[in-house]
Image 1 (cartoon, helix red, strand yellow):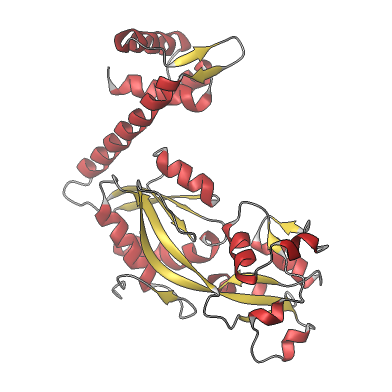
Image 2 (image 1 turned 180 degrees about the vertical axis):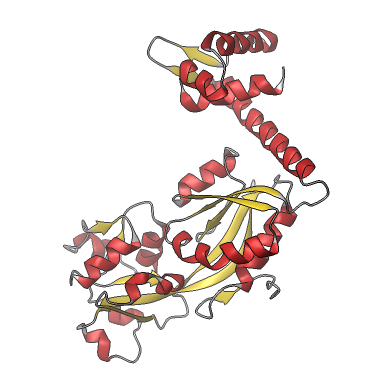
Length: 311
């Protein structure tokens, strides 16, 4: 068994096709198929079920795939560390972030991160929470910026900041004359939400106690795929919505006809954390990233955990 064999197994598992896996690995299909057959003979088990229509992992193949990914992850970490010589901050860091956070946080930290740690190469991906946690387990990313608690013994959460929710409403709304907006004020309003899978939608429902009331509301089927679309619905007069504080730096805050102000509730916030595998070997790189995030946040959010040092 060698690392090349493990790469072949991972490629077939991810593409579910020997031809596409061979293209990914830059080898011929007979070469890849032959190596996997040799590996199966060596291990004495079948890793894949092969039919004319599809390729599927066997149960033991699933278990071996997890170990193969861990091994390749460690190999990548070794390569990065060796290339960086003695600098644990150098090399590639694969970071995921949720869509309601990434467009507003990344512009704040990318330049400071590049200035302070020029050897670190950030590889970004933007996906929903469930997808990011699955990719963490699959060793496809190194860490993720999430806004929901993660109850998983294999993952560690590094708290970064608490982000309050703001209420966004049309300029001619009755809220415009209010000095303070409370949760009770929202009870009679049509609260627009993001589509299923967005943690912000779940947080808004929990905070406002929507449940059955939202199901009976004629707005229940009017969902948006992004915050920008949600704001356009608000501007068009379809209702109001909740936006996280960092989103107040978005372009929609000028000229959209939408006004926003903080929601007056101690519970109206979400905690943003850097989540990573407990086995990830480059904790120093994550600490450096966390410091840069904390040091470059606006005063609309509250830093948690160890404060970043201003540089």
